Structure formats: C-alpha cells, structure tokens
Image (cartoon, rainbow over all chains, first blue to last red):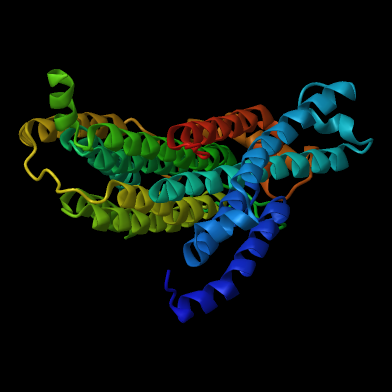
Length: 139
Length: 117
Length: 170
C-alpha cells in the first residue's frame, strides 16, 4: 500500500492528539460537555484513522481483535459490577451513596467508574465494527 | 408570529418524510439504511427542539446563569445516537451478508430470487 | 437558516444518483445537525453527533460500499414513484396538522419543561455535585437507562461479529 507522506505525517501528528482528547473528554465529562459515549467514539476514531493510514494488519498487531473483544465485555461488566458493588455495600443497585461516606464524593466515584465502563465498551465496539467490515474485504 | 414557533417542527417533519420516502420508494437496501438514518436524526431534532427554552443556556451549571434548557432530552438523545450507529452497523453487516448470499442488494431482485427458489 | 439548509441537504440526498456521493452527503448532513444541536443548547449531543455521524457512520458506510463493490444500480424502480410520494405527502400533512397543537418552540411553560426537568436543574448540584447536568442525569439519576443502552451497544457489537465473522477459521 502506497501512502502519501502528507497523509502519514498529518495523521502522526493527529492520532496522539485525538486519543489524548478522547481521554480528556472521558474524565472531564463531569464538568464540561463530554462523557463515556463521546470519549469512546473519539478514541475509536483515532484507532480507525491509524488503521486507514497504516493498514489493518499493523493495527491488529498493536491492538489484537481478541483484546478488543475482551474490552467490549469488560466495560459492560464494570458498569454492572458497580451496581453489584453498591448492593454488597448495603444499598440499592447502582445507588452510589454507599461507595463513600461523603455522598457527593460517592456520586463522583460512581459516575467516573461507570463512565469509564461506558467509554470502554463504546470504543471497543466501534473498533470491532471497523475490524469486522475492513477484515471482511481481505479474506 | 405564533406560527413561526412551529418552524422547527415542520423541518423535522420534512426530514422525517424524506427518510420515510427513501425507505418505502427505493429498492436499494443501502439507500433504505440512509433513509432510516435521516428519519432517526429527525427524531433527535424533534426531542432537542422540545427541550429548548428561549433565552436558556446549555445545561452546565454556572454562576449567574438562571435559565437552562431541559437536560432530559439531551440525555435520551445522546445515548440514542450511539445506539443508532450500533444498529446501523448491524444493518450494514446484514446487507453485506445479503449481498454475499444473493449477489445483489436490490430488494426487488431478492424477491424474484426467493420466488424462483 | 441552518434548518432550511438541513432540509435541502436531505432532499439532495434523495435526488442523488450515485451511492458514493449520497454517503458523503450523509457525513455533511450529520455535521449540519451537530451545529444545529449547538444552537439548541445541546452541546453534549452535538459532540456525540459530530463524532458519530460525521466520523464512524461514514467510515462504516464507505466500508460497506467497498465490500459491495459498487454494482450497477437499478435506476428504474419496478413500482412507480407516485404511490410512495402520495403516501409521504399525506402522512406529512397529517403530522403538520398535528403540530398546531404543539407548544411553541422555546416556550418555558411547555409540559415537557414541567415534569422532572426542574428537579434535575435545581437539585442536581446538591445531590450529585457535578456542573454538567447531562452527566448527572445520564450516570446517576438514569443509571439503569444508560446500563440498558450500553447493553444494546454490546449486543449490536456481538451481532456484527457473528455476521461478519471476526475470526475466520479456514
């Protein structure tokens, strides 16, 4: 595959920025616009850009499809797990108040955890969509 | 003046009908998916329009801001968009498989092949 | 106005012959929608729409197009265009008629603004303590809802993997 040097240099500059921005959106979602859904999509967009420039095999060596598949379920498990954790700590399902003595702090912990779960699942699912569609073409 | 307040809803309806038309009038499956997507965005727009309050600002708490637009539709649509792309991907995957099985993505031709079989 | 531009883009989508052009136009359409969401105060939604609609959906559609290897398209539909057009116009007219009973755009007294929204806006600072009300509602008040949505995305992911075979053993 022949790549234009302009495309390559630009994406080398952009991809780290995109992924970093995704992480910022993930953890800053409590204060500004953002959150797990957006962050997941942005990180996935970074990975997809990498795959478009450097090709699918190289991307899949860095981020194997199996790892993506595991991440898909891990995110959902983290979300559901927070729910069970609150039950064990003596509260209702997904009632974060039990996570910390200070109610506001407890809400923060709960929200950051589940947003992270959301972000993981969304990013992994979007990447696996791309793997599925792009991988179909070459087999 | 009063009727102008309905302009948003009318555009929503136009978009909805464009999507609807694509779904029922075109036999190409990919075009139907595009139509469904347009229909979907029109619903998003409807919800967000309902949540807007004149003079309000984005629902991020800040000192000195009194009126906020309704955050509830935002939450619903935010998740709906991401779910929407997931279901679109599922539809596209189905189209790819249909193309492999029937060698066409035209609904009419698929019907013809089904009747012959 | 943006709304009119959006409607024009949508109608352009119907008239376009080439599927490739139509797919690219959906990307533009999404970007327009996102700017509209910003105007309507829905910054979070605009963010999502810009990333999803203009980014991922377009890439997926293009991926599908390349998998389908652009076939000659049916230009002449077997059934006429008049019947669908009539159905669409009738439905549209009925819906427009229904809008006359809708509360006017931006009305603070509309029923939609009266139910749980004031509570979210007034209490969430004390109860959840986050400046972004959308995040508070999404992750705390409506946590079950969001859990369900994530499960739907997860299921769709599994569905695509099953359909397109992420791992193929020859």
